[in-house]
Length: 239
Image (tube, rainbow, N blue to C red; front, side):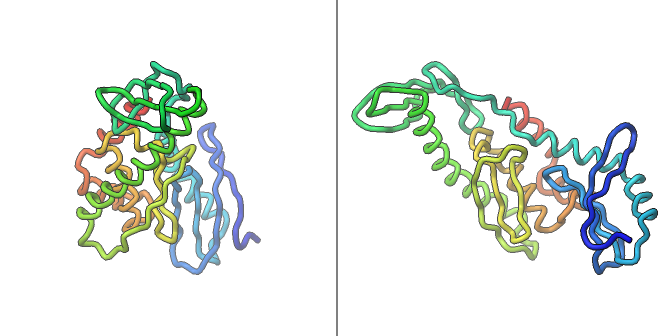
């Protein structure tokens, strides 16, 4: 007899769906696809395994669609070499990199160029260190402004404004913890402002609708009409 937390599988249409089965004190069965494409099924304590498998099988097409949806959030920014002449993104625009030696370490963005100055002999490693520090500073500034803008659209809901954390993530643009911390991918600072706002709003909507139910997308559409186009721009602009 299964109980507690169990790792399960369903083979459907040539694809294997791995999911975590949790038995808990609830009245209905819930199937959720998380942002990392993991699948969690919560079921009442007395639910039979056959019934659970049938429910998962019936929702298999929806589960796969959700997994594919999250897969499209994987950052696609190509690896950079940090050499003069290379282009780098900031808020959706391309800027050419120019590295030079000078009296101080600095990064300036002007006239379509990233001017990176180093006290030591210029090197890709030093240019990367300076530019990444500059990006992080700008990310703190721009993400805070984005949260201010997006929060106003949802201020009428009884939700608590989240704390924002910034770090590099491999598979997601953003996430929301159970404690209410919104984590944003550092790479987002390279995307257009409307795309940053989309990711922030997407995560804010999870404070109201935890899963990607029809209610979630109805809410998202009400806040960002035509959000699919913005999401597509995010993916295209970061290639």
